Image 1 (cartoon, one colour):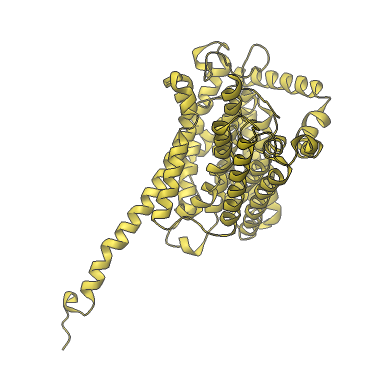
Image 2 (image 1 turned 135 degrees about the vertical axis):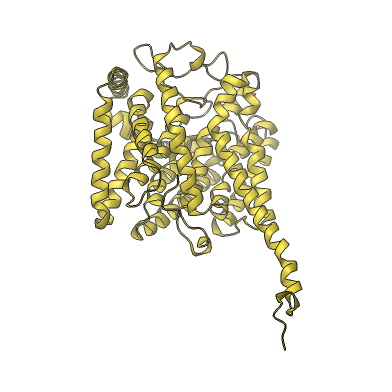
Length: 460
């Protein structure tokens, strides 16, 4: 007879011996997720460290996430979560080409030397693999949980930005990352509030991400987050629109609303929730319009909008050409860029500081001209084409998810794809949000391999 005691069954000892191996693998994956979470935390607090807590270390803190992203890659390799698919193969081919280009430029005396070239390679390539590592480590539930923290942080972030808007430009709360730099001027004696970030662009990225998670929570039929959090976040996102003084923030949040409405068109069964969501957003704006701070911010923002549009020749020149002209400008610069370019890293702020002692635009302000002028026509356009290709892959994946009633990846894709194509990588905060949100978008798409994870009906 076979004993009923499981410890006497054949193979039990082998199975028992395998348990610590499985447990160790789970611990490695948990550590990988925690390090990615730490990347997000540093992305939020990096500016506060540079301008308030440790201003004397502002320069080295600029790359505080660089060692962390290397640790993420090492940990992903340890637990076999580092991808080896088509995008990563293309990435390493491009990286090899750019490293050879850097050597040619240094030997030919082009650019700012080895240190500037190394920073240029870091700017263009160091953080990009994070886009593909995050979906290997995060489940859909992880993305939803991170969204909860984004909405929670949006409440004090909005309060901080209101305080910065109401304070004098030279107040300590409006400090920049160095004594010879100040926050960007707004109008009527105001500055563009930066929140905890170094400059207003960081706050813009944060609230576009918060808008994506907010619209997801409002449009879902089931409760995703607690009601108090959703309502408080709705008011916070609404009030920062005029307070921010940033057209990029307002247009980015507006695009997220357009994305939600388009989702309702693609999925008529969800149209009633989308319509109700739009009414809630309008109601929040109507309530806030009764406050004095909101009215003052609206007046300042409209003044800023009119001044910027008039200076640029109207909306057609100020917004349309600002967007589409950045894609056409590199074509006119091809004779200037040549085949080898002007030097990797020369077009970045840090590279300019190393070369001249001051942060400035030595080549071009927009991203596409910077890339082409730094690396030449062949590799420059190859790198830009790679970013467009990755954006298209994300867009197609999000579109397929939208057809399957998945709203969150659709909303995140509108943010991720836009930044992948247009965002300036030379600004570390912009770079961080671009790769992080792109990775979140891919991770938010349900997969069979993550079926062990279940998104809770409500994350309290």
